[in-house]
Length: 151
Image (cartoon, rainbow, N blue to C red):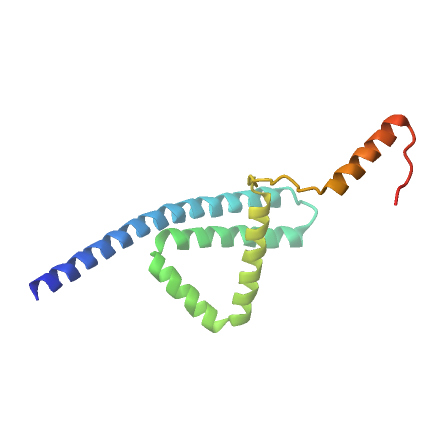
């Protein structure tokens, strides 16, 4: 009985350690996210300054900059668990908006990953003897100046 309690206590201790590490990592990511939101807000404000001839667009962009700042402050001062609870409540109240946001986030993520430099191991293309012969023939014709269409 004592051994079972000791094992259970060890499991809870390990679980608490895992949650502590995960919480620390999420906090770091959250801080980076807050910085990025503030930089988005600043970039939006710079864009607003360049629109003297478009007052309606200027007002909308200014409101967007304020929204970025509010979201950054919310993320900075709110625990991760509370953010998750708020997101779940929003999803229940506004399912269509949630679907739209998920699609937009997916598109942004795909663009981000597509533009990220990723090294892909290139396999050599396997060529049959017939293809190699055809390529060699075209090369000889080109060198000899007798290049013409072949079937």
